[in-house]
Amino acid sequence: MDPNVLYIIIAVASVIVGIVAGKFIFAKDTNKKVQEAEEHAQKIIAEAQLAAENLKKEKLLEAKEKFVQMKAEHDREVLERNRKIGEGENRIKQKELTLNQKTEQLERQLKENEAIKQNLNRQIELINVKQAELEKHQEEHTRRLEKISGLTAEEAKAQLVESLKQEAHSQALALQQEIVDDAKQKANKEARKIIIQTIQRTASEQAIENAITVFNLESDEIKGQIIGREGRNIRAIEAATGVDLIVDDTPEAIILSCFDPLRREIARLSLQRLVTDGRIHPGRIEEVVEKTRRQLEEQVMEIGERTVIELGIHGLHKDLVRIVGKMRFRSSYGQNLLMHSREVANLCGVMAAELGLNPKLAKRAGLLHDIGKVPDEETELSHALLGAKLAEKYGENPAIVNAIGAHHDEMEMQYVIAPIVQACDAISGARPGARREIMQQYLQRIKELENMAMNYTGVEKAYAIQAGRELRVIVEADKVTDGDSEKLSFEIAQKIQTEMTYPGQIKVTVIREKRAVNLAR
Image (cartoon, rainbow, N blue to C red; front, top):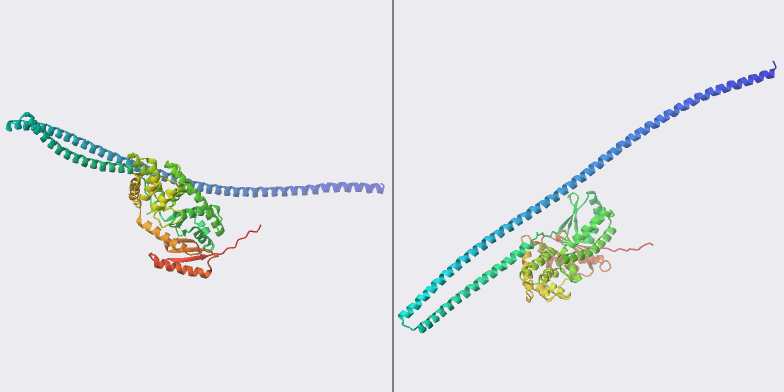
């Protein structure tokens, strides 16, 4: 055989053997890779199952927490609803009790009237009997005169007429006195009846104004934000509002202490906005307090407008409406001034209607009788005379002006409405629990303390806090130096010590702060 052919055959055979061997080796590698891929896939599936199981457990935990939270909220809502239902039931029971008392009183009055009627009938019968006896005596007397004296009929008639005249005159005088006494008694009885009916128709619950307000928190964690680092936030709030913030162990609550309800309301609303916003720092605090103070001025106007509308009073000057709104944040002997004025207005309206007078005019005078207690500027006049001056200034009826000025006998009463306003003012203040003398004395002392500090030059604000045990005086930095601050603190303390009577001691703190503010644009 040709060697070349042999070589070709051998080469072809080698190629064939190589191809077969390559296919065998490739198939072996392919099976190995497939096996590895399947193992990797199984591993991925196992990891995915584990992750899915963990995710399932997390979602179950979240669902359970959400359920617990929703259940707690539901329980709170149920408790609140039950509380409101209980309060409503108590009010209904109280009204039923009051109605029963009024019914019993009416029955007693009916029985008394029936007894009076029977007594009058007996008196009429007695008068008729006496009248018949008198006529018999007169006839007998006439016969005796004719028989004994032997007088003529004309003479006897003349004598009889004269005798009857004297007897009739005597009886007329006695009857006149009896009628006068009866009229006085009926007048007093009718007056008492009108007053009692007026009080019953305008009866209202009495509430004493307190010097503190409780600000509720969602959690105690917010207390730290309100206090701030080293107490900067709480000092800024107290300096801006003049309200003492008491942060104690009371859970989820902060106590706002101040004698002025308007300041407490400003502090409460400002805290509410700061807590809701979450940004609590001195600069933000001053901004929020100033904004709240402006909005509260608008709220005062709304309160005044709502009050005059509810009472049916029209054409009141807007400044008087604002003064009426300010009454909501003032108290007199612990009695809220707006509630007192509204009650006096209603009493005056009812009493004037019972007496046949103008009820609208009486209501107007009753509402405005204490406007001198909320002046824009302090004066030496009493509140009655100042109120009369304000009413005259804003064009009120002379009868209203006189009623305001005379309700404490500081002016002569010239109109019938004046004694009605005076009586209704006394009725409102005399209700059980309406007034508290000690509270008014305390508030007056606190106000005098602040006014004493405000009389000094350079004083911008003065706040009495800690129930009057501390006086914080904020001065203008450009008018008072640091040395003057110490001198001012000493002078105020000495003046308080010599001119005021107070328990314990009073701390006088003068605060001077200089700020430079610029904007980078």
